[in-house]
Picture (cartoon, rainbow, N blue to C red):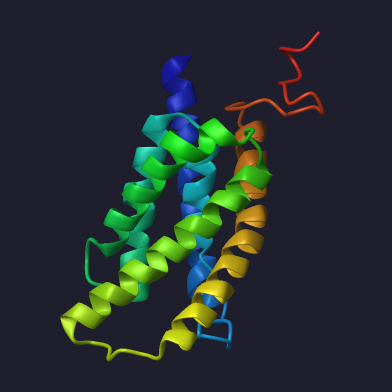
Amino acid sequence: MMKRRIASSMLVMFVAVSAASICQELVPPIPAGNVKAPFLIGVLAYYAMRREIGYAVAASVWCAMMNDGLGMMPWGVSLLSFAAFVALCRLVFRRQMAESTFSCMISAVAGGMLTDVLQYAALLASGVYEAVPFHFLLMRLAVMAAAAFVVTGIVAGFARYLDYTSSNAGFENDGDTFSWDSI
């Protein structure tokens, strides 16, 4: 039974990462700040906030590889950012917020901004980009925060639905418990 749950969980992760990668690549950037919607951070936020640590680590590596490849970033930047984001979720956010799609959305704001700052610093250090005005960076971070919040609501809801339909997780009722566990 346990091996079947691991296999179905990894299949769900494969579908979620694949769908997020396709969306991140095909959805045009937001004109204000030229920000790509962070669909992969939405997947990572779901696994960091709602699933076990092993799945969060696997998702951080997989999403980081896809994010760096799609964004043509220096390799390792997203892995550093995503690993720090998982640690932040596990050590801070999960202790402060109830497990829900909304908590995924809130945490993804931090993940999106962290990733954007680290990617900018890496591109600046490698000489690919020149420094941009500070007000542009602030505007870009604000757009990234809004995009991460909205996109993660969709992505985390989709991933939770996939987990529910594959019996990896139960559906929640208003008491924040799982249906077959509540009396």
